[in-house]
Every structure is written in C-alpha cells, then in structure tokens.
Image 1: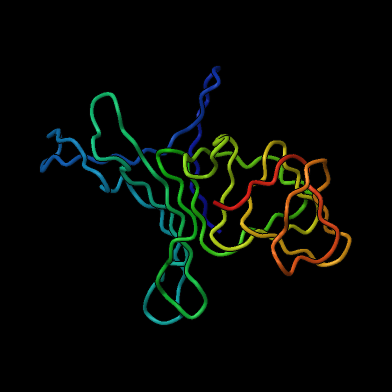
Image 2: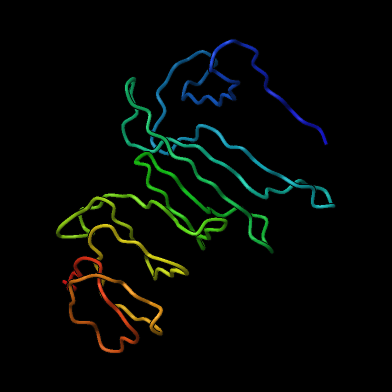
Length: 193
C-alpha cells in the first residue's frame, strides 16, 4: 500500500511532528482565541464501500476542553470513535479529558497480563475516609483473577459464588442477605451510607 512518512534527521531527542492548528481568525494570519468545544482537528479512517463513497470506520478527534482558554492555558480532550457493525456513523468509544479522566463505552478487556496494576483517581464523593486511588464502576466489576485492594474497599453489597471468591484480612463486618461462599476482608468494609 501507499505510505506517508514524516522524517526528522537531527542529533537531538526530538522527532517528527504532525501539526493540526485551529484559530477563530476569519482570514489567514488573523488571530482569534478558540472557545470551549472548538475542534483542534480530526483524523479520519475511511474505507471504500464498493459503491460510490468512502465511509468512516474510526476517528480520533481533538477539541478544546475548558471554558477559558488563554495565553497560559489550552485545555484539551481526545475522543476516539469507532463505527459499529451495521452502521456508517462513528460512535464515541473512549474519551480522555483535560483532567486526565478516561471515559469508556462498552467493555474493558485486559489480555496478556495477569494483573491490572494501577487504577488511580480522585473524587470527593467516593469515600468518607480517602479519595486517592478510587475506582468507580457504573454497573458491576467482574474480576477473573485477583482483586488487590491496598487501602479501603467500600461496597454497597457483595455476592460471591463458591469458596474461591475471597477478600482476606482481619476486620469482619455484616454482609447483605444472599451472600454465598467464603468472604473475608483485607482492611475495612465500609457500611453503606
């Protein structure tokens, strides 16, 4: 296939760059500050439909992600979109915002490693004791191997199936009705608010 390359021969650590610039200036050279949600640019990945068009299969979109860009601040986000089967319209699959928060649609699959080592975040609503290292799921968290909790595990309910599911430790608290199997705790089990 055909390729496009950007080459940089220089005896420094720098490499080649692909620059996508955005200004609200109405003419070339006119300077005007961008606004929240303005697009920096989009990479489009397109395929021939065998008829009369090239259709989008995936996109990577960069945009301003803050209400007040300035000469000292340019908050941005990246949005990765893929087109599902039976459609011609890309749908958002993952977003990385200016606060480094990652939002994913669909299923997170981790392969090729036995441990997902780090899930880090801060949110004042997650816990009454600690907000560092919080991990939230909107539905459920399914763990195929081991779930290692270094500090406090806050739950509103635990259901286990068989003796293989364990959270080992010293502090024991009451479990909700319907709990099955052998369940223990590595630190503290926070009672539901």
